[in-house]
Image 1 (cartoon, rainbow, N blue to C red):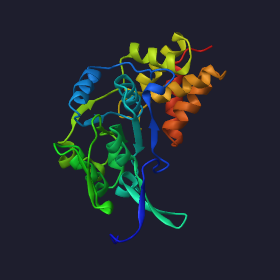
Image 2 (image 1 turned 180 degrees about the vertical axis):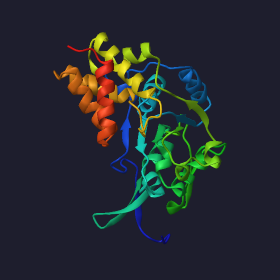
Image 3 (image 1 turned 90 degrees about the horizontal axis):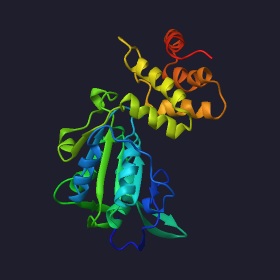
Length: 286
């Protein structure tokens, strides 16, 4: 881009897939129940502006944990979901033509750096590896973001914190997190909560009674503990909440489980049949 080209800078918008929320404006605090010392570790990292890596299975509460911590710390939260078509421009920004004028539009990462927000890149390994390199100087002592197309380097504003997440059990060898990225972060390992905690979470989030939540959690744990399971993923807390929400909406428990759990976990008829038999063995009959 020639330096003589006329352009302006816009910092009030970014890619449509970025979600920005300001925790102090939330009507209620995000509901989260700790499974270990993750909150204490995150608070300590936040005090020093240290980057955090969240590891854990799908639907175990990684995103909700970040929302809860952002709310507790009073930080604006900007969330982006990683995907294979993501480019560095999707994070940093790009020049756009508006009304005959070339305008620079900040990407969500640049907005977070300028504003001192908490930036959460979910499922980081889904993004191209050359894209994730852009976060490296923000994840070490420099706390800087080079914006090559503007010919400048931005220093992160006070309060800025970088959080990324991934599911190490799901990713293939070809989609693992590079050591050069991993070693820049404080790691927090999350997992599905204990049965008692998960019952509380499912009951609260789905709006069902404790008995229904207990039945759903029992089924979830039975699926997670299957020997030699052919499933790529097991029943997540999120999945149990969805099943509970169907029950709260008036659907029979078994029908809710069939739609939100069994049919979601597999398309293989034999696996679906086996899961159905497990449902029959675990869930109470009305």
